[in-house]
Image (cartoon, rainbow, N blue to C red; front, top):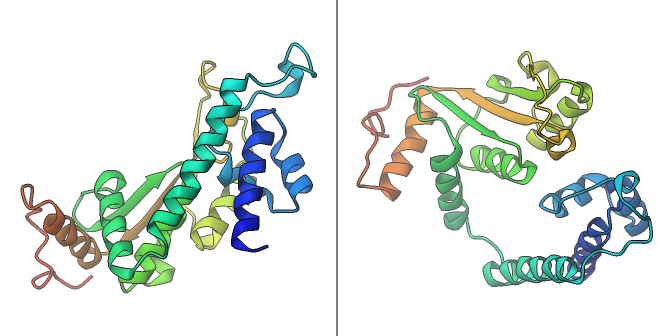
Length: 225
């Protein structure tokens, strides 16, 4: 499937999800993977058909217009940025870690529920830093009642970290006010214990945000792991 074909599949998937089609149904119809569909439609509210008043009830035109506009803006963003340079990739990862990463000295830690953000972080960490793969650790936070085995398998694929390097999961009691299907794979923590790598990252953040330097961010003087 070429670039244009992927864009068209992306837009169709979003429209089908707005009609309360399941991820598997969309994937089968479009001939793409379920994980791709999950990524494309992650921001579209889903209500199982069994809860709807009528199977023939059509989505509101304004909702469909919103979905179409989001897909159009996504495409415009891809075309505007084009191929990301190494320097842009580095800067984007620094900004992501500044917002979502742990600041405690000595330990690189990133947590998120969004598979795209987690995948981006892992690719960034491996691209710009000398990583010992065997020291990477992953921990899944998942509501009780959701499939832990499926969640860990999902995050193992997303992070590229084997499951024997996963720490014991945390099972949270489900809040009745929260729809369990919102984060079916839970939240994942990706950790790497290395003082030097953490200080390298914080040094880059200090370069981007000089008004709030990190006292332990001197890359040249960082101690070995």
